[in-house]
Length: 67
Image (tube, rainbow, N blue to C red):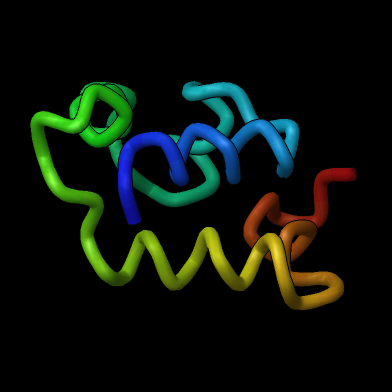
């Protein structure tokens, strides 16, 4: 996943950097590195974000039931 794809998916999920970091269990610093394109998005993070976008209910599960 490229930084542009990550940015697009976070927007589609309506997640801020802070929200996404919390839901994915990573630091905001890591997320900002991925968004800058300086560091490659890890495959596990790509998978989680893709699931959140494509699988009904997955976004809510990642959010811990928060709607």
